[in-house]
Amino acid sequence: MRAFLTTCLVLLLALPAWAEVEIKEVTSPKGIKAWLVEDHSIPFTALELRFRGGTSLDAPDKRGAVYLMTGLIEEGAGDLDARAYARELEALAASFDYDASDDTVSISAQFLSENRDEVADLLRKTLHQPRFDIDAVERVRAQVLSGLRSDAKNPNDIAGLAFSQMAYGDHPYGANGKGTIESVSALTRDDIIAAYEGVFARDRLFVGAVGDITAEELGILLDQLLADFPETGAPIPGKADVTIDGGVSVVEFDTPQSVALFGQRGIDRHDPEFFAAYILNQIMGGGSLESRLMREVREERGLTYGVYSYLVPKDLASVYMGSVASGNDRIAEAITVVRDQWADIAENGVTQKELDDAKTYLTGAYPLRFDGNSRIASILAGMQMDDLPIDYIATRNEKVNAVTLEDVNRVAGELLDPEGLHFTVVGKPVGLEG
Image (tube, rainbow, N blue to C red; front, side):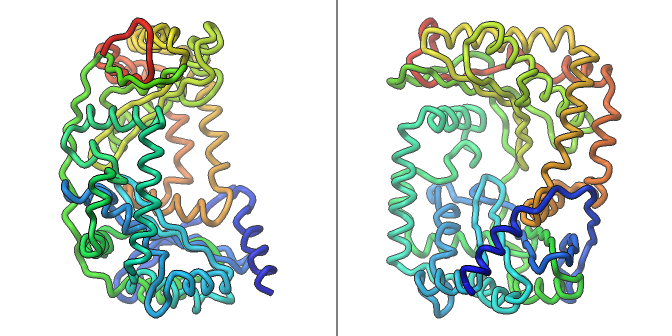
């Protein structure tokens, strides 16, 4: 029976894309708000809980506390130690996933309708009675430390941390959210409890739910799970001062291929020009083989397998970034081509065909994001965190299509800053000096 239920859960996670998503706003009897998409065609529900703040809540001398705490949430709760907890979760054919990023701690739950009450009991224990047993703390700490040692040998991770330190300085964004070997080694159980108390509060909570549950049932579930949390948590840091200056910095690392992260100041998610910038990025290097960077760096010159650009509008700062990797003897040329394309589009703009192709791709790909209850629940919570309207899904493609060539080229001239574009290179590049 258990194997059958687990198989059902796996199958239910792979739903076909939804043509339309009808969202209801739900308010529980105790005032907790959530967005819900009801679908009673299958006996399955996905629940996404997001808490704003994430690893940015760490004190400067406690880096890694939120990340370590999040990893410990599943290591026992209430009267269940880690093994008993895992057995209980398996018996219920349910799945809980935990994650911590710069801005968010998230808990994703997936469960069958017939087990909803038992899953709710276990999830409540998870949220309100984490054990943080010493043996579990040491086991998960060892896993985090192993990951940090591995990251220290990974050129991509080295570049990411170096770029963040340069871009954000002393702000929490400039630190590794996982902490350092020194900081994680020094964390105590009391530090982990303090991180837990700082994260889980109602003033930073966002909820998305999708599946076989009514608004009334969801309201009862929300109060059971979340109403007892304190109203406020740890203070969220202020805005970051983005300190990116143009140029190149080199981190020496013994590898035959250099990795480069590049970036400049970005654009806020709520800026009225954001959609124009979003389409501009798709044309520049948004992942398509038809992007300018792919065409010029890969197809025309064979300097890399892949080159990409992406907008990074975080809660407390916005940057515009990209990445490219090439042989040590060719990375300098790749950087030159990237900077030249940045300057060319800033000065001359893009073509109508490039704009039309980008719109076609972005509007066609958008419905494919809604490929299962869990993905949709995550999107609902993310929309709320971004303060998007409840009808955003229905109107998003209209906003993309409304952008004109004049809009994109105006934003290209205002946003793209080839002189302010900074490249952080990890490797042994030839012809580059930091």
